[in-house]
Length: 255
Image (cartoon, rainbow, N blue to C red; front, side, top):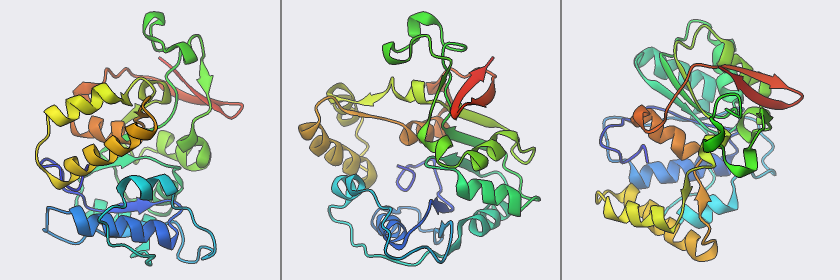
C-alpha cells in the first residue's frame, strides 16, 4: 500500500522480530512494487543474531502476496532501532505507522532518547464501552471495557513506552474493536475494484483478496492496513482523546 501510493514516500521498514525469511520477503516486495526510486528503503530487524532455524514469516503472507515476488531469505540492513533513528533524523516530519508487536519501537525510544516522532498511527489498544456509544459497539465487544490485543501484548513494554514517551508528540490509536468493524468483504472488494487506480500495489491487493475471498467469503478484518489508511487520511476515523491503560493483561481506554 505504502510502496505505490502517490501521497507516500516510504523511508524505512522495521520488521519484528525480523528473521531472515521475514526480511527477505519484505525486500522482495520492495523490489517488486517500489515506484518512488528516490532512494533505497532500509529494512531492519530486532536482532542480527536471531536463531536461523526459527521462521517467523506467516504462511498466509506468502500465499496472499507471494505470486510474482522474487524473494529469498536475506540479512537485514541493520538493527531496526538504529535505522529508524537515522530515518527520523534525516526526515524529522516523517510519520510512524505501527503494526505487529512493538519491540523495535520500544528499543528506538529507549536507545535513542534524542529521537522525536511528530506523528504516530498505532494499530493496537481497545476503545471499548468507555468510548464507543452502545449503538455502535460490535456485538462481540458489547459492554467490554478491556480486551487483550495481539500487537500490544506481543511486547507490552514497547507498547507502554510508545504510549508514555514524551519523544512522541502525537499519537493516534486504531483500536482492535474499530478494526473488527472494517472487513475486506465481497462488498469491500467491489468498492476496491470500482476505485482501482491502476497501480501495481492496488492491483496486487485486489488480486490477492479475490483469492482469499474464494476460500473465506466472510472476508478478512483490516487491522494494520486500517492504521496505514488512517495515517494517509485521518478523517476516515472519528478520533477522541483518551488515556490508554493496561489491566490484567488486557488494554482499555478512558476518555
